[in-house]
Image (cartoon, rainbow, N blue to C red; front, side):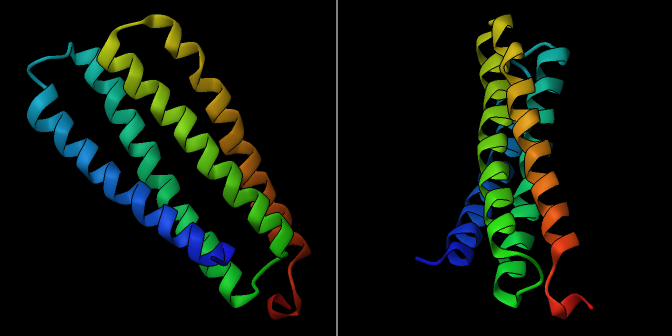
Amino acid sequence: MSSERLFFALAALLGGTAVAAGAFATHALRPQLTPRLLEVFETGVRYQMYHALALGIVALALTTSLGQATWLTAGGWALVIGTVIFSGSLYALSLSGIGILGAVAPLGGLALMVGWGCLAIAAYLGSSALS
């Protein structure tokens, strides 16, 4: 499977599960969690959706040669890894109440920043299509 197809599929999976997680939070978790833990869970959902959309843009950029494929691919994987770690740790923290899990989220945030940096480099280096 090509990188663009894989990233598009992962974007759809992340987006769909973000919608499901948001609905789960609204309908099942609201009565179960403190307002603070519900806010943490919803932050995970929001960042997951933002980065699902970004990953879809990476897939599109790969299909249209709007950047350096190596940097786009690296950025795409960093976004996937960062989203799983960042949002996943917030979901786990919310559902378990284990505070130490909050210390994992910055690692996911760092991966997300690396991903965005790779995308910036891809745009900067670009291709003749950007000229």
